[in-house]
Length: 192
Image 1 (spheres, rainbow, N blue to C red):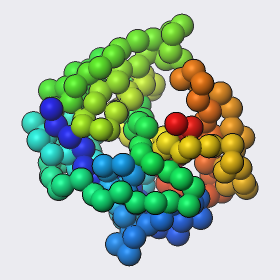
Image 2: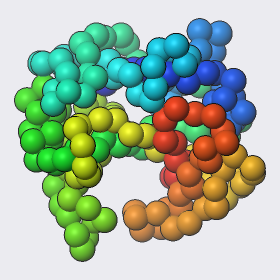
Image 3: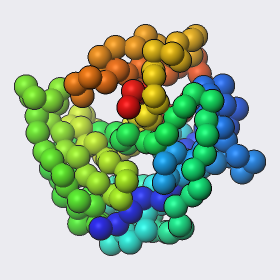
Image 4: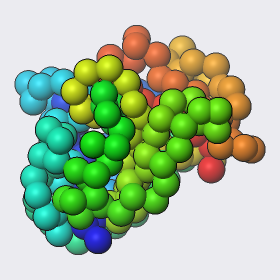
């Protein structure tokens, strides 16, 4: 199975630091065994690349997955307690087409489902420790946002974070980062 190593996001490190992340001197936020490289607004908008070791085909269904590899990073400590990326969200006008393309590129489709169990037709594809949640929505396949695990989302309340609410996953709570935070990617924090 192919394994994600890095997400490249067109955000500034200062915006992530204001949310309690600790970017290193190169603008990298380590979350579990993944690097989030904050490439700045000149890189585009949102998730501009996902670097995957063992990728069988680049840009599956137009998603910016590219081949590359590096050993997992050393753990990092963040003031907000963030420990890992829970999942990366992709929207697609055809869940099955996108999930099948991700599988052909080396991902492992773990589950497909839809209403009433899930809010929309969805598939969950694993690339190492990264789960890509493919949700059926209008338009071409694209990355929309990511969810990061923290020990206590309620303890992080503040002007840049929306109210915590029950998550789809039983027993967990989630809060979405507000647009005022200045991120180019949708970001949510979810309790472990």
